[in-house]
Each structure stands twice: as structure tokens, then as C-alpha cells.
Image (spheres, rainbow, N blue to C red):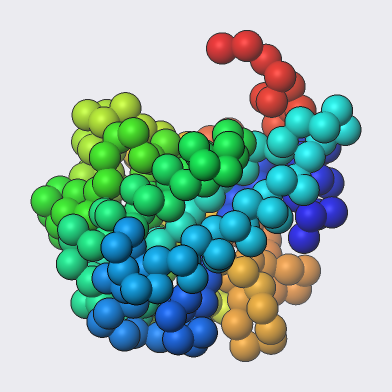
Length: 263
């Protein structure tokens, strides 16, 4: 992974880490859903030290992400994501808003101030939400976030997905403007992409309508689980049209100077 991060950086690309880390208390996967883990690992909790050890491991990894001149490679880090859902141990059914905020603030403070990792852009990304209040219920504060976004996947109903994207984007754009944050579609996709025009007829219209710093499609894992097209896939031809649209900027259109130019 370190080699890949360096390769992307050398090409002028942008690296993002979505951190699905195991439960520090039980050792179970991120998809375990105990209701006490967050309370136990925030400052004052009986397993706080175990969480610190997790962060130390990440810091050790991050410090190896260096460019040719020894500079730390900038990366986007999305910790504790999809917190408005209940499928991770840090989800909205597994901890209170106060506990979640305490965990987030400690995490960012520890990585930035204690471990001196100043190459991190911190991304706050929700799952489902219907209102601005719901989106901001667990927001840790402007000093702890650089990028805000949401994760949205299409199941089968394109009309519902479009409507949901529209509603969530309206809220996101308002919050981003008021809090001076970069808005992003931090995860999206349609598993197996059976719709041959999904990219240009479903996803692209939303991206054109609202401000979006970047959009991330989910992974290609195996034959029965993928979110990006490949040669011969049903939506491959449409993806080429999506790629060619003037709205879209892919890695080959970026310049390595994005890391060196002065703002």
C-alpha cells in the first residue's frame, strides 16, 4: 500500500483512506455493533489505551508515506465514517452524539498534535440523513474537519436514488458554504452496474448540479461485487462518455503541481 500511495502521489493523484478499523475492545471487525466500545475508548474509558495503540500504528504507517524529498505525502483520511447508520461500532445506534464527538476530537487532536501528522485532510462523511440537523448532530466542529460529504449507493430504484441525492446534496452544499468546508460525494456506486447508462443518466446530472470537490466510487472486490466498469462490462461505453464530460477531472488531467503551487 505504501508503494501504491507513492506512485499515485508521483503521478499527481490524490490518496484517500477510508479506515474500517477493528473494535479496539473486542478485536471484532468494524461491522461489529456493541453499544459500549466508544464509551470505553474515549478519554477516561477503561480501554482508552488500546485505542491510542491503534492510532500509534496508524501514525507509524503514515510516517512512511514520504515523497522523493522526504516530505510527507498529503492524504485524505476518513475516520469513523457513515456514523448516521448503525452498522459500525461507532454508529448512531452504538454511541451517543456526545461520545462520538469526543472520540472524533481526541482522534484528530492525537494524530495532529501528539503525533505531528500534518499531512492529513480530515473527511467527515455521513450515511443517510434527511435534514441539516441530522447531518450535523455528530459534527465535531470546524476545527476538526476539512472535507464534508456523504456516502450514497443506488440499490434498484433510479428515481429514488436521484431524489435522495438531490436532497442530501442541497443540505451538504448549504453546510459546506456556512462552515467553509469542501463538499464531496465520499462514496457512491451501483453494485454490478447493470444499467448501461447509469454514469451519464443517473450520477452525472447530480454532479453537474451541485458543487463537488471529488467523487469516489467503491471498490472492485470480486466477480459478484464491483462498482467500477471494466472492458466488456455493461456500462463501460457509458463510463467513457462520463469520463469525457468537461465536468469530470480524472487523475491524468491533474498536475503534480497541485502539491507545490502556492495559494
